[in-house]
Amino acid sequence: MDGGDIFVGVMSGTSLDGIDVVIVQFNENEDIKRINVKQSYSHPMPIKIKNDILSMCQGQKTTLSEVGDLNRRLGIIYAEAINEAIKQSSIDPNLISAIGCHGQTVWHQPPTKKLEDNKNNSNNNNDGFTIQLGDCNRIATLTGITTIGDFRNRDISYGGQGAPLTPSFHKYSLSSSIETRIILNIGGISNITLLPSSSNNNNNNNNNIQVTGFDTGPGNILLDSWIQLKKDGKPYDKDGEWANQGKVNEKLLKSLYNHSDSFLNKLPPKSTGRELFNIQWLLNVVQSIRNDHDGDNIIIKDEDVQATLLEFTCKTIVDEIKKIKICKIDRVLVCGGGSKNKLLMNKLSTLLEKDENGSGSGCKVSTTDEFGINSQDMEAIAFAWFAKRTLNHQPSNLISVTGASKETILGAIYLKNDFNN
Image (tube, rainbow, N blue to C red; front, side):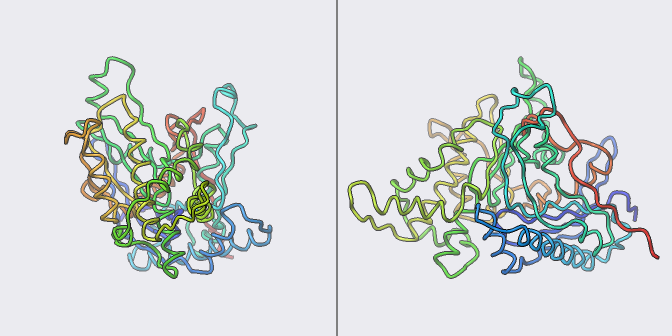
């Protein structure tokens, strides 16, 4: 087996539902692009680490000691997950070129300055930054494999949002010559990628339509946070069963929109995270409805809140998709944990398969599984691919997505130790 194209991708996202590891072989020639997943493995996130992340990632006070210790512990648990995936695969670690590890985001602050304010330089005076924890030194040491991390900050240094990054991989893996597609990732946060078909661009009298992508708002983050709070730590609402027991509260739905309009009304490029959509934000919104301005104490059942959150999640996604007027969308391909929520998928399909007049001539809704990429592995595979691009000195960001002034190589490389003395 040729080791030159085997990479490991590691992802732990906003949902904190586990550590996803893939071992993937990329085989390429001029005519074929093939992504061969050798091993897929999900490693549990220890509850203590999960709670420590949650106690830090919503703007709470912390200390450098706590940050450093969490960084250390995440590096160790990532290495454990990687080594277990390698063990299950029976692949010789010496055949693996590198690990691409996203790390755990604890704070994401995209630049507030517009790109044109600094378009003639690298935007190194913008106020953006992002912090992903998970010590890559420890990962490289404990696995014996070159590790690449810190993928987002280089894009931010050029004035970009640093997110989403996966659209470049979506372009590589799921572009079509005959369909214009949207890749919808429903993780903790939802994001979309517009992939124009080559035929669409060939028939367009104007400039070619670019690949674009951005965060649309919450994915599973509010749904998971609410059920965890109200159902004794239950990790998620399987198939939307609890939400299906409730009814949408229109006042709460309106208030959710009102309390997030600064993000929802913003034009792309844009990105968000737990800094905005978190459990305390949600509790404040719910309380504002329960104590309305007329002084009435409105009772909202917990399951009604869950139903309303699912409605809010679906509608904010669909709102953004239907704002795209530059071309007709043929298909939406869904990936991420939300693709496994039957009620959420049914709601999305109902909203998306109708056009603006309510007829049935809208776009088709599928999952990426039907097109060769496991919906749960998508982001981990993407970071394996980013690692490959970095080692090959190739850029991985799309400036039409993040708003960066330049394409750039992403990530910092932590070389494996070849000294045996």
